[in-house]
Length: 294
Image (cartoon, rainbow, N blue to C red; front, side):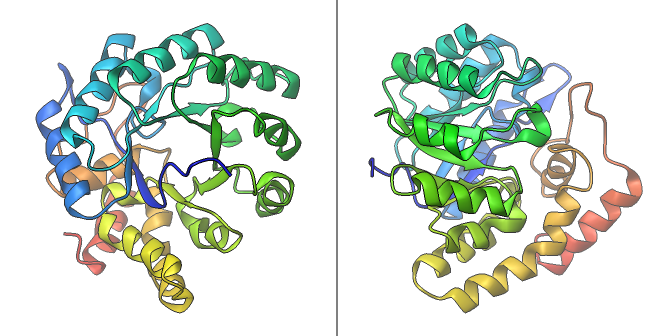
């Protein structure tokens, strides 16, 4: 097994924004809140960070800012994936140069690629990287499913160290563990099934939920790794209503609304994302109050 990037809970950070650009003051406060809450790693410029609507310059600056604010206290896993291999290589090299500890690389979206194309895509990026790579499978967003046999081939690359699995397909995830769980770490990319993935041998989660409930997310993974499955299962079940609210509209619409209610920015989103439905927002806030988050 390659060296583990982190164990436990990593937060897939939102990118606080205003109509004028990225809100770095709020991002700094959010990072501090995450670190004070005990998260084990931070992931800027992923799906939850609205990477698709950040300019190349903004992507680089958000990664740079996060690395400097964290100052080595936890690993920073920079999102460098996109649907053009050459651009993903460029983003990856830049993030390595800024001091990222690892890279999160999503499967190519829209143009998709065959499984052979995915092997070529990830191999080119890994060959260009100085740091370990977390391949990111989220077919519901990309239209492209990274299959266990394909990951098994990629697992032989020395810099492909882990998988963020967000297919939601438990049978496929079990197959992934069976075929290469001894060669790559597997992180849950879906908050609602973090504990089942941990039970299969997962190394942790890369979480949307932990933007707003980091202490509870950490409590679940800490309990699991301490051998207290009953407590971990209790936290997972307790969080389920909130998780459902956080995914009642396309991510990151609900989590930005939740973060704004906690004082982390205005909840501003870039088109084509639009503000959360008022009724769903009230249900979300009610669940947050039940958990003592507001």
